[in-house]
Image (tube, rainbow, N blue to C red; front, side, top):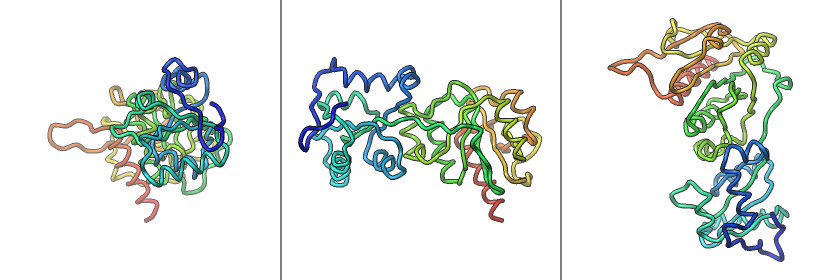
Length: 273
């Protein structure tokens, strides 16, 4: 990314321009993995990233779409702060966004991962662990719900789930920037929880305990599994309790993001009581 000249960023109008190709590369898992960077798009996301503050590396704008007064003010603030950026031709900008109505501003951010060893749970803290969540939309929705429920941190127990996938970023509605994200194995998670006295509660349709009958012992970590196969036997084995959400009608399960919300808010309700 180039630093702006005067009061404007340099224009990129060709799809073969290396600056545009760099942005396209970040739309791929390989690009995000190799660079440690990711894309966000939209006024709300960029504003929240600036508030956290998240590590904004550069910005990209399309002035023809950036008609919102707050968005224009945000863009000026980013320019004045010295953050490098480019102006994209309208078609190039649309190639980078998932939004039905693009807002004309986006940014490149550095991924933020929290080392497992640095985590010290407080007495009444609630943690969330996710195993094999395949849908980026579900993952982003869970991150948004986790922030609303006051979760202290989110463990990603596999090598596949990517919270920085563009669809996950969009679904998180900015909650991604405020969460502690930890990548680890099942054993690393279990050892960390045991050493620090956490109760591990897993969720499964085959659980023996109705989630409403659980009396939470704090601090606590809730574990939810993937959409197709649920939790692995390894996670169930290291859990202190396995709970289920009773189903009515012909349904035998519900969406993993919905299930996570039901369980997290039940736990936070118990904590308040």
